[in-house]
Length: 97
Length: 478
Image (cartoon, rainbow over all chains, first blue to last red):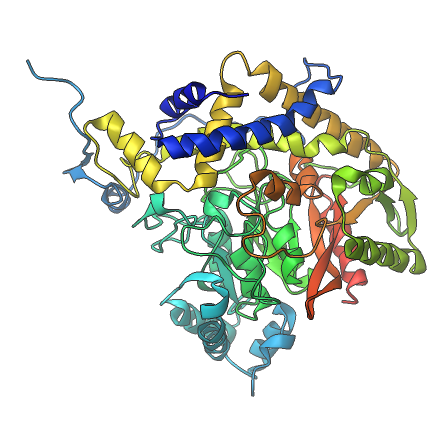
């Protein structure tokens, strides 16, 4: 039902590297799961129904900036695998000429 | 006095602490001893917190100065996807390697303010995706009732911790049955509250339109005490509700009416085993003998609940897992450029079930398939909710078994994702509809000389945990 190429495309969108053996087993598992959920196609549904859970209500709050303590900022930055001063560091994405 | 952990409940422990029969430090030590005795075999805990005794000392002070509450000094276990400030929180995933929580989840903060003692963090299926705790990156948890079997999942460590007398209660999270199914397999009580009743702030998101935090305990009363402490509106979670969101609809003093979806239970899709059917019928017999009216209810679309669930959840998972990129926190695996860092980090950090669901979710949300899968699933979800709302015009509770069978063997379903998904057949409906549901022990199945616990599930109207507690307590003779 799903091809190895389609799977590769999905993995590219989801930013996950897949090996050939991953793809092989996933194709099989996708077939079994999609085959199972396909039974929904026979349900007579009104498609304009809005999907929601329980009572729907707005949760409003002022769009205000709140400052965080230097300690909190330091702790958050400390969780990053790589940092430079007060910044989270990543590899360069713009080439220099 | 010698502390008998086996017979202890939150209520009893609180009385003892108040009378000074033992201190919270004594009680915490007793649990720590029990954990070091049992955890090698069970693997319920991923980590025992080194500051548990400090929390116990602080709780003992509250008994001295008269500020103690029912949860002060009560030792408990926390599922590894709920944040406890300064402690490691990994959701049993390698991708969160080295991560320390920078803040408290609202649920854990409310417990901490009551003076509860956190013994440690419990094992789970990675990011709560699974029904056996076999998907943990840190080894499987064994069922304390039979070590060759799974404890259920995804909150398997939390249920096993309570069942092995390694905590008085535990917090879990439930997206498709992850509190109730392990509670059923381990012979304890587990409550999935109404969607929005307990704040998810600080809970690692899996399926955001379904996730809910709830207690696992020995008794219904214990779960009620914990629920009372953790539920309520939270400005940090816009989906939280308060007690007035859903009007109380049960009036007067009459006994609640119990509905049974007989047609669904008898169908071949439910795959219910003989032992489960016997235990369930005898539970219904109990209710009939105790003055409850037990009636048949029709839920015409309920057999579609599982396929709906396994479209909606992967879709939400694929969005929620996007934040794990090797940049902000956790694992980082170096690639040749920034994009390649993502590919390598996510491949190395995520387990098989997480990858499977992320890709499935990406598939069902992709252009051309969106209407066929995601939109259709949402429409059927609404039909299932309407079935339940209609049923609740005539009944106060809907009763089913929690699971189609008792705990299965470790490895039995590990290589067949679909067989594992079918475990959730009775539990997903409460998550899809947002209604509260509990699993309470209702008998055993004898397998290979071991007594394996079975669970009875009671689902109520939105916001009606009260009826669940009332009927559950009577059923267990509390």
